[in-house]
Length: 261
Image 1 (cartoon, rainbow, N blue to C red):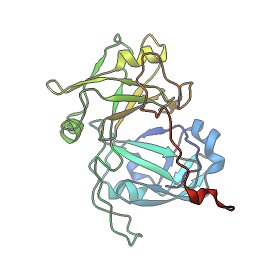
Image 2: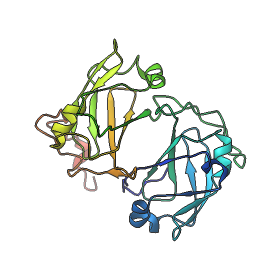
Image 3: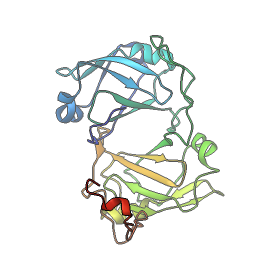
């Protein structure tokens, strides 16, 4: 997908059984108010397997039109979630989160209007995702248990000391126990953010890249991503930063001394 350099907040839409019989999907007002004027009247919704769904966008009604084929092609029955990403240009990326809270195994299909072959979806090509819902009635716990399907796909490669990255660039270490299949990171995450607990939020999205990094996105009650203050280079005192070179070397060759070099 083309990028303008703008990284927009993600949003999630729950799919009900009645939604799967409709050709329209409403998108959040927060997203439309901030980015709706950037979307053209017609564009594509793109999945990891190469599936491209043609869509029409009604900005006034905040409606995407053309989803009936999508629901049929992916056999959605209701209870699933669609995670949308937008990078400021023409199309939307979408990921399907199944009712077990883990990203689905994508079928080997493309849209019936496409003439290309589907792409093979792997952990090494885009990572894998699961969601965790915050229970506001219980105190903060440090451990979370990913869905069984996520562990079956990623557990053997998931690091014991994963690096956890937030959307403001802060990175810290978590732990993973293969014996009990749980990730410990929520208490440290609250400390990094200066929060007592996660009760102000509704859902966390975990994206494992397959090689040791886990990106965590936080969503409010409207399932719109919360962007924390900071910058891609801000590092908390308790955080572990990415490896950064402390210097570089320049070698001058005779050819560099020529008039037009």
